[in-house]
Image (tube, rainbow, N blue to C red; front, side, top):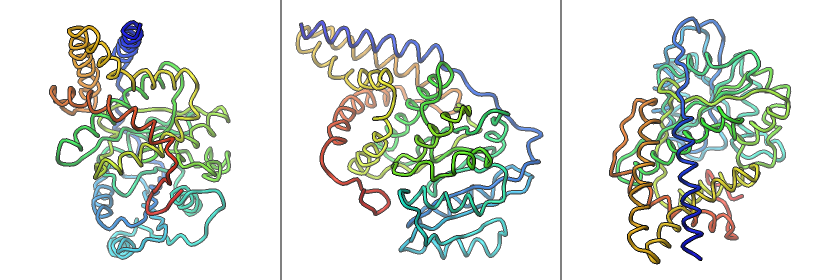
Length: 361
């Protein structure tokens, strides 16, 4: 009986991956005629002394000729973040530093900083990213070109940089997840926004009450996307190299679980069919193990088949992002994901505090 359940689950996984592979399409690249709009880039920062220079240097390399400003909202940093930003501001008038002292009830630290920055911003379009992100030189033009008349928000693609196998597995996980997001966005409607890589039209953000619309949420990007959709505004998801931002890898497995616990507060509000789809994928390796223990060779065959299928999906996404996918790392990723995905669900329900940016929630 157990083996039949495992077979059914794997067959469903097979259908899901097949649909994802078939429907995965790249986004159009925008390069010309997009330098007229004044834009503002918003970054909430807290204890970012190790990463902020990397972020600012990437901004200074942006290929955009229009009016541009870089706004940094400091959420009570205790290190030298403020001094570093202010030093850059001395030689670059586009950089503006704000110390965030007032807190709006219900907002987490990042959302609160972004709410204040959105009030100070002079641009018609607001770009949002994080202090540990290195954006591509064509990032502004790409996301700006993707905003249509009835579109309020567009997310770019984030990949992970770092040395070591754990960093590479995180990168594969991000690519796989955002490939899925692109398919869901194209076929149905976007599930969420990418909080470290997105553009928002300022007037449409104001129409929903600004970032105050995401009060009492630890996943401000997901809550923001929902608030905009409730107003019947379209949101979009990119999949191309021009919209890339490169995040630094999470340093350890405990930090990774903390990151996933925060994200899963948003997953809990997804539609039932999306939650079932994610659960089916999370249980894939468990089903393979059941087949191996009951039938033997069929479990090994399942592991091999899904290794190939995962590689094909990641290879296709990687081709659109101009990044190489290591064939053997996808096998390690399949096993890694199969172990940590169920553990993430367990950790989500475990009665422990969520620590984010030095604060407990």
